[in-house]
Length: 109
Image (cartoon, rainbow, N blue to C red; front, side, top):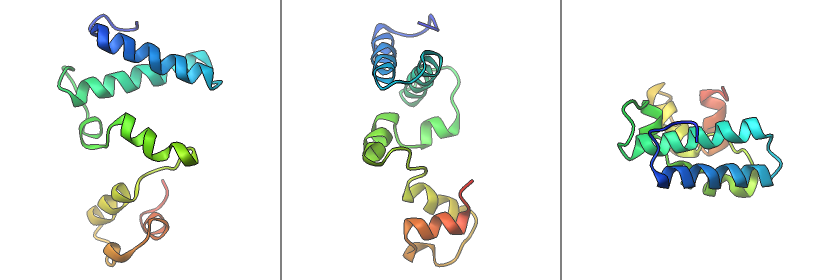
């Protein structure tokens, strides 16, 4: 366990994520990093962490995001995320755009 502040629930969550990544062939160092980041994000979302970023609390949960994208690998940003970015950039016609059109409009970066 990388951090002492984690509860036993978060420890189990970390181990579960790490084991799943290792089973899929992810290098150990990367698996540990992804697992720790995921647990820390969930802690921030539930109010357990002292510090949290806006993306940790505003973005969809890690589990939901993984479930949405599991069928097609790394799918990038969701249509809703692209739409919000287009809204911030004041791109006209965004409400009728498809996901690929939104990607082109806001840029893939």
